[in-house]
Structure formats: C-alpha cells, structure tokens
Image 1: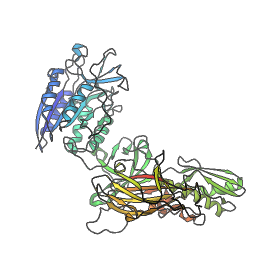
Image 2: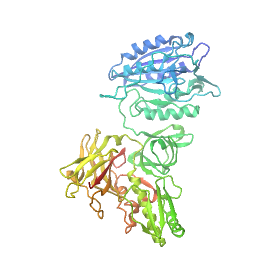
Image 3: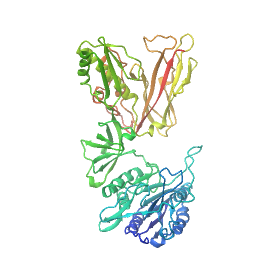
Image 4: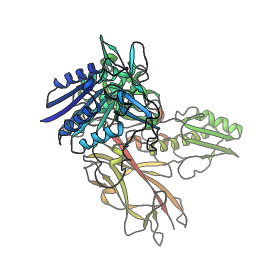
Length: 613
C-alpha cells in the first residue's frame, strides 16, 4: 500500500506581521488527509514557533525524504512568502521568491527558505521515485494574486532590495540523452509577482487558496487529475480575490497524491463569473467563434458547447441542448474540440468597376469570404473582362471570365474552394499531445531520387528518361495505443483526397503504409508538361484519432472552372458554415467495434515537391 509522508507547516505567529488563518488551513488539510482511504498516512506538523528554518529543512529531509518508489511526499505550507530583487542573471524577472519561516524576520531574512533551495530538495526526493507534491499558500508562491480586500490580511512581506540570496542553483540541463528527470508538482496560491489573501469564510479565517483546494479535493477525491483540480481551485479563488491566480506546475494529466497517468482532456469546461468557459483560446490556436467542443454524456450521448467569444487564453461557450449543472456545484468537465471554425478569408477585388460590383455581389453570399475578414488574404484582379485569383498556396489558376452574374458566382466559388483547401491544410488540434506521437516518412525506391530541402520539404526528382519518382509512404504511430489514421494527399490544384490511406487503425509502435505497401508514383498533374524545371507540390497530411472519424469533410475535388460545385467538397453543410467537423461516421456499429464518439485527435504533415531536374 502506498505511504503518504505528509508535512503540514502553518505559521500565524510572525513577529510584528501576524496572520490568522494559516494554522486553520493546515489543520483542515491534515483532517482531510486522515479521512482518505487507500494509503497509509505518515504525518508530521510544524505550527508557529516550531516552524523554524532548521526545523522545516530537517522535516523535509528526514520525514518526506523517507519516501521511496510508489510512495508520496506532500508538503503543505501556509504562511508568509517573500519576493526580493536579485542580481542573478538567471532570474528573468530580476526577482527571487522564498518561504518565510518563523525565525526569518528575526535575523534579517537570513532564515528564508529560498525557492532554489526548496525546489532542489523536493526534486532530489522525486528523483528516488517518490511522487512529490507541494501545496504553497503564501504570497509570491507561483500561483495567483492575493490583494488587499475588505476584512482580509495579505500574506506577504515586503523585503528590502539589498537582500542578496546565495547558493542559487544553476540552470537545469535542457538536453542530453536519457529520460526526463522526475520533478515535484507545485500547486501554488498565486503567480510569483502576486499576493495571496486570507479572509473570513464560514466564520473562520482561512486562506482563500487552501480553502478552495480542500473544497475541490472533497468533491473530486485524492486521485483527481491535477489539471481538473487546478481548474476548479482557480475559479473558486478568483471569485473571492479577483487579482489572485493560482498556478499548477507539473503534469496536469497525472493524479493528485499518486502521480499516476490519468486519461483526461487537456481542455476543461467550468463556470466562471463570465459564464461557461473553456481553457482554450487564441494562444492555443483557437481561431474563431463557432468552434464546437464535445464531452461524453451519460450513455455515451455527446454533449456539445459552441464557442461564442475567443479570448487570449480561454473561450466563452454556450451549451447546446443540455444544461451542465448549477454553477454553485463547481463542476468541471473534460472536453475535446470536434469542430473548428476559421475566420473568413479576407478578399480584395480591384479592376473594372462593373465586374468588381458583380464579384462583390457574389462574394456577399459566401460565408467563407469577407471584405474585412481576418483569415487567408485572397486577391481578385479584373482586367479586360477576365479575373485573376491569387493569394492561395497552390499552383496559379487560369483567368476566369467576368461578363455575367453566373461568371461572378464562379469566381466566388473559386475563392471559397481555395479557402476550404487552406482550412484542411491548416487543421491542427489546439491540444498538441497526439500530434507529437504520429509521423510521416517518405522513403525512396529504385526509381527517382529523394532528398530534403533546407526548408524541410521532401524533394522527389524524376529519373532519367522522364520516369516519375516512386516512393514508399509510411504512417508511424509512436504512441502506446492503437490510433485510427487517414492520409490526405493535398495537391497544388487545391484538391484533398484520402485515397492513399482511407482510414485504418495502426497499433501502438507500428506503422501503416500508403496503398497497402505498394509504391506511390508521383506524377506531374495532367496538362503540366514534363520538361526541365517543371514542379508540383503535394501536402501529405495525417489525421489521427483515438476513434474512427468521418472523412467526408476532408474530401475536396481539385478546382476546375467547369465544376464549381466542388467548392465545398463532400460536406456542404460544414463548408457552408465555415466549420471543419471531426465526427464519427454515421450509422450503427457492430458490438465490439470502436467507440462511437470522438476522442483525442491530432495531425501531422509533410510537404513533398516533385520536380523534373
């Protein structure tokens, strides 16, 4: 059975700078730990005058340090924290943080427990195989703002700038061979530059962060994923102290008190003062309102929320056809992006006024296009009754006539087609986890030549006698689980086709091969002369998912002025709305088949340039 070595440090009785809720915090935390089952608790505590620097260090080394592989070491500190100037060039902010022990104020700050010192000690325990977690409820702890509020005391000390720390640990090695070193997990009350606040809650003075932590642990239990736990704590703290932002440093997909991997989405739905919110925003690659996130409902019925506002680090959403629960319940849901929205292409039209007017009338009816969009910049130049479209990433298109509304509609359809092709090419999951576990290889055969350009493109050259190159294309699953994969060939004629690998499961650590292991011939497109200097570009794009997906939204015929209906590909609804959907195939499934839902998914791609030397 796992042993949890726990040290609870609470200090209210500071000389001249007393606090009131710190001992209450650690007593409540100790009580919570004793009521849990499934492990053996070994508990030590230091309150007030007992919590000198020497005593805290001794307990860290001699008590928490007793843990071995399969055990847990828990430090819960509630008290003052400090921030001071430092001349150490490795401190990017010019500041350094520390815990304030009971005797720190008596000796001019020399009894501070420095951040580098504490971190190194906790990491040394983790290196032995112990799961180490530190819960720090003090100012400058690395988490959230505690500001001065009514009937509240700020847990922080303003240290004089001349104080200079010693023994700062050197920079950690970021490279080299071998596994990543085991490190501790930090749950902190506030960001390094912020203050942490305590106040009266239910008739007792408590630290806002400690109170929120224990409320969340009571709801979620001791094996909650760190990411889910932190999301709930962060919102509870923010409701009481608007300038305090709790922080999590460590693996969010592992469990509290155990450190075991937890299957969970990196994106979480929770209720905030602004409404229902997902922790995914512009910084993660979420591009436009209208995107959909899905969570599995009871009985496997999917439940969807739609993004109504994209912010820098989060997005406000509205549930569709279901009610998540009362906000006061503090519920947190894991969600997965299942339909991504893209901003309309930004279209510019110049040239002959009459033709320009016709084109603008046609463009106004296309939801993928806009005169002032934030998306792909496309340009139409009209001259002598002919329109030339530019701005896309494919081969230059032929000029199109503009003499009637029907001609203008064909131009608008061309613009929409190019826009949709870019949507597919640029599709990425804001969650990069699965994308990093799948890769594409393009290997040479006996026909033609294969090399890599300075930009990282695969360059395949025709052989002598104008024989097209022949390659083997592999999809490699470097994860430890089966993944369903489809390989799209995206051509420079603005086509997207899954013909090379139409969707199959690839086992963990295994590879799937295009055309079931047959060579792939790379021809110049029809109508393009095989002459010296001729070139074409393909993007090989893999979409990988934990469950099977419907591939219809990823089919797009090459653009042709004779077939403008291809502008929205196989999924006209998705094309018309600007959404690119990742959904399971329709129809019933046999018992024992893949789950009829969308799990985590990712993408990877490589550009292949075929040329005639």
